[in-house]
Image (cartoon, rainbow, N blue to C red; front, side, top):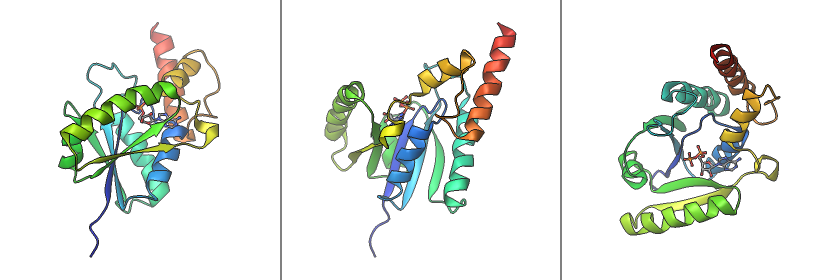
Length: 172
Ligand code: ADP
């Protein structure tokens, strides 16, 4: 029997966008199971807690795969990406590529990871061009300024973001 292909898609996902979701859908064509490694966020000061971001992914996973276990959402803390990949049994790390700026950063990390873990391959996927300009950071800025975020997020995530921004504005 062929071994099960497990992929790891690590990220901060603060919050998950339609770009991230598009990458997940594409990755599911390549692997039998996809672990979404949600960064616990130490040092990044995320707008959403780890639990909130994991909840958003679980919600999307239920819609996408009817909770059949194909998508597994796990916390990804202070460990090396390749160590975490091994821990979850993944031999493929999935990353999304948008622009040259992503490329330069990812290029270096892959070079290091190849030396650290020759058994793990990093696979780069490109989202549909209509999602390529989406970045969590910019979507948060749009939301903070009261703009419409529905072109960038699922309705579930958009609702949470608008709510969080309203809370923040009230406090300010
Ligand atoms: P990071 O781990 O760099 O904080 P993010 O949570 O922003 O990452 O994103 C996780 C992964 O998804 C990265 O590989 C990033 O390049 C990719 N990604 C983010 N937004 C998009 C998008 N709009 N289209 C394709 N890939 C994306």
